[in-house]
Image (tube, rainbow, N blue to C red; front, side, top):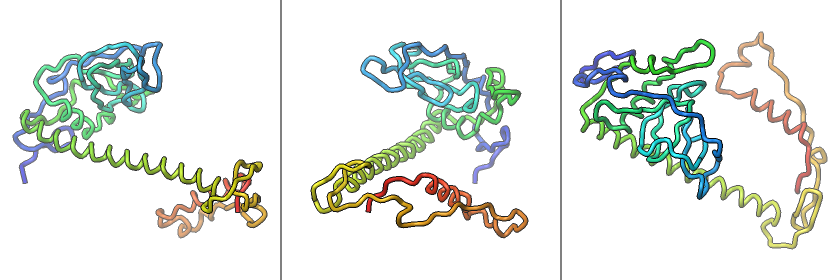
Length: 256
């Protein structure tokens, strides 16, 4: 195993250079988001507007015309690292790398800062805040540019796999919704439908309330004096009770 050296409570491989963020970047604050910002991307409003937690909308205004690194500046997401698209707008909730003093791989740096959890260095007085002064003095380990690119390639490959999996899950979820809509309105036998107070259902189906065929009871809180009721913690009794309560209060039309 490679020798390691301690850097700001993290370990860095021996041979990597220990630098301050201010040795690599000069940061600046973004600007107030354009008034004509839309949550959804359109043909006209297609320039991503970045905030502390990534893209928060789209505009037709361009603030930067090159990919850059941004950090959440204020609030819950201060310290979060993101990379912008080629054309973008940076809101005043973020800091952006106005200048790269040395040649670096932005994907490596973005992942490095994410791993470092820069939020831990934020000013916790009142609303969490990351300032340029705080950022500039934070140290991290910097390998050679070829090694940066190798690490960036590995992490990018993993990220693409995650995104593909997320897309598959979203597609499958939408498919399930479509199937539920079809099955609970048309059934499985291809019979005619009839209009009811809860919408279209197959002709042979009856509409009933939950209370006609079941009895539901509100849960209770176990005695706090008996620790056995609360351990092991992996038993989610609270969620189960809440669901019972919700269903009890939400008696509605039901198809059988």
